[in-house]
Image (tube, rainbow, N blue to C red):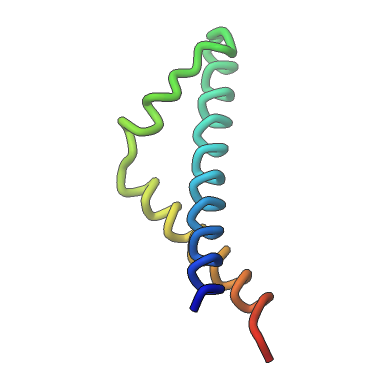
Length: 76
């Protein structure tokens, strides 16, 4: 039971990290295409503009990471 809790916590953090990295990279490429300075990325809009597509991506990444990690550390 303790292992499942840790795997869930790890999967949650990893999925949130993947979502944040994809947000930052999207903003970097958007700013690059429009000629905006690179350091003018508003990170607060990551939390303000969280929509259903972002939550779907988060749960997809969470379940993939959880499944792979659980199968990898399963006791036989």
